[in-house]
Image (cartoon, rainbow, N blue to C red):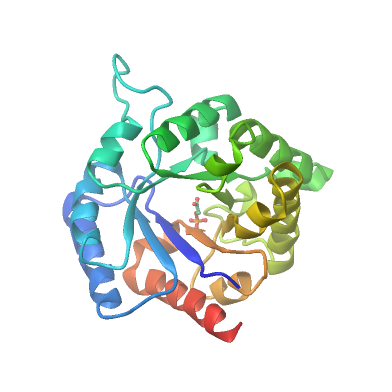
Length: 258
Ligand code: PGA
């Protein structure tokens, strides 16, 4: 089993002081540890520099929650991939279902954002996932296939090797209703097979496919123990230092046991 990746998505939470406190609490918990698990904190943009400053001495990296699909210029309110790279941000979440829903992001705009991030050496964490109706209608595989095909399958093999996929069933995000480990594993296997068909076995095996949606300290161990779940994209539970740390520990435990 390869090492896991645990990414905290803070969404639009925390004041500056609260963000500072949370970063310090997480740093204290991680101090002196040598982790196999990759850890990424994705705070609101205002706190990214604070995060990159701490990231230098700690076992985590900084990630953004979005970036602009254009390179620079007259795009009021936007942040470019180049700006993120310039302050040491290494990851960026793209196409989160909240951005698709409230900010009308399409697979095509997400593809543009992926290109921007790759141009500036950042790692895109591209989200996909079906709505509850899709699952009820049995179209969840088709929905996820379309999202992945249209947002990342334009990449070359070399480019694809650097990205991360996050499967986040929309009905599980912030609802307390987690996909069962079997449901998560089933979709992760499906995604890996799509990648295999497009890019071959080795790239598919190495691809990081994270699970997100009400993942917490209580269920992380079981989810991460699934052979095709390479870690988690954690929302609510990443806002509490100890709970986020427990999720990281779950990832470490799974790796030791396998
Ligand atoms: P949640 O959010 O863990 O609060 O369900 C996950 C996400 O939206 O990335």
